[in-house]
Length: 290
Image (cartoon, rainbow, N blue to C red):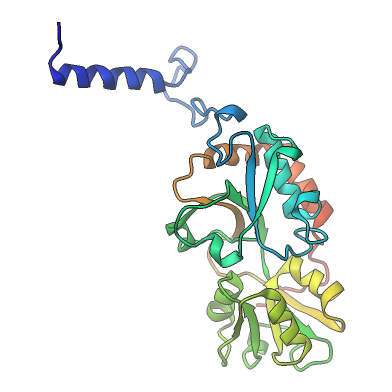
């Protein structure tokens, strides 16, 4: 007998609800609540990746130290390369099953579909960016740092107020730019460069007084990129919650919960802390600017 359309629809909904119901039973969970991971299927074959059997990861080029080594994300060296492969392993992918693709920094958080499963490129989690893309939980808590040439007027600054008259250089689209504008609030608008290396070269050529980058990058700038430079100090990018880097996803990506689970496991096991200890220099020699 043919059922009325309403009964058919009701039956289909009931079947769908039954199919999607978590395996955990009330008997196994006396409170009657279902844990967030009870129905999460993060088996490799079930992951909604762009290319079956492959994990596609995006980052910029050049890929700077200490986040990557030798401008080669595929070698597993440098903090972010190591984090990416650790997440991939937790998701069930071998190193050979990870594919890298070049994504310019400011393009990563632009609206629209993505060609990667996630992007890792020192991208700070912000409410503005979350309107266009999704983020994982944070994998690194970061502070900004001020770099100047030794012997220059602002190299001896001991407070943010001492930097008010400095001419700043920052990369476009970064939270460093926001930090300069909102926290330091210099008397002169900062010079904004499309690429970080352009800001670094401007400092070398004394076209600007200081640059602002994240602290680990500042250590690399002073050690390897700008001879005769020093870290003036570090500062928080805002007075609100700490700034964190997150893995970036296409808006609405169903992969986020499984990556969050992988990051939680890396934190709980101590592996993420060990990766940070290995690849990122500590904050010694970078006084706090207030």
